[in-house]
Amino acid sequence: MSLNPSNFRKKLILWYLENKRELPWRETKEPYRIWLSEIILQQTRVAQGMPYYFKFIEAFPDVKSLADAPQEQVLKLWQGLGYYSRARNLHFTAQYVANELGGKFPDNFNELLTLKGVGDYTASAIGSICFNLPTAVVDGNVYRILSRIYGINTPINSTAGIKEFKSLAQELLDSKQPGIFNQATMEFGARYCVPQNPDCSNCIFNKECFAYQSNKVSELPVKLKKLKVKKRYFNYIVIISANGKTILRQRTAKGIWQQLYEFPLIESASEISEKKLITTVAYNELVKKYGISEIVLFNDTSVVHKLSHQHLYTKFWICYSNPIKDDGIKISEVHDFAVPVLISNFISTFPEFK
Image 1 (tube, one colour):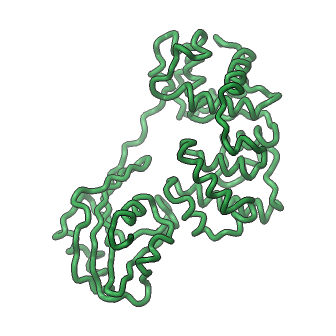
Image 2 (cartoon, rainbow, N blue to C red):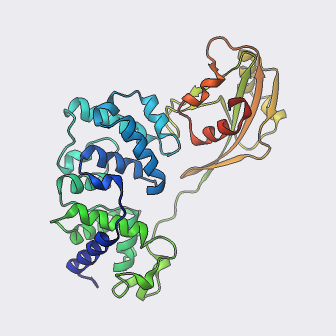
């Protein structure tokens, strides 16, 4: 190594103690709050996740109150954060901890790993911060720091890379204060050793950093190419009935947005016209069931909603129908349902729902 572990950890922790942000979950070592913050911050920036953390703490001040809440409420509070499996796992784990573990989180690494939604990174974070366990965190920030400073070309999303970076992080870890060290690495990666255009000339590690000295900062870390992004074409049928009701359906199948609500959906192989839409079997079933008499396209240009491995090209079709008696919901109640952000954005702009 160009920078020995002792010097690395001393420099890093000193920088952290002088520059760390005052974040609410850094004011406590309570496992519930640390776990909650870590789940929220998976795939989420601090600025985006902070309001959600406060909302959850206000609604569910402890693990039992979260466990006792209906899943609908949890999903509704989570709305807009994406990756909704995190919210479902959050609720499941809260129930497990509250009901099976007496409200206490495990205090060892292997048992933390058994919690649903908790992987190596989250278990390391909770374990080190709450219980002083000597387990190093490895996330995107840590991959970036270590690959650049130590000149590691192994792809971070390969089996070999995951093992190599975990081993190096564990070697560098300050075993006497692992919680502080782990938070320091995450903070440094999030605020200083950033993905694009880091301020390397003023970096505390620039003299030892392989990437900076070799002019390879933009080339590290190395990542294997992602799977090809799939395009999907969604046509939402937004029914407005003569008695002021609409239809929302819960997505129960595995995949995106499980357990969230949406308008009746007709997925097509490509963007389709009204003429083609009204000939589909699915549309005619809706016509027969609800007595649709008129259809109007709300957005001429498809709304493109980008997920990790798929892009959704979406059109909203406003359909006026006969009075709905049984399965409809009042238009005034649409805002009470947990929906994907794609649907939420539409609801906020459609005059009938304001």
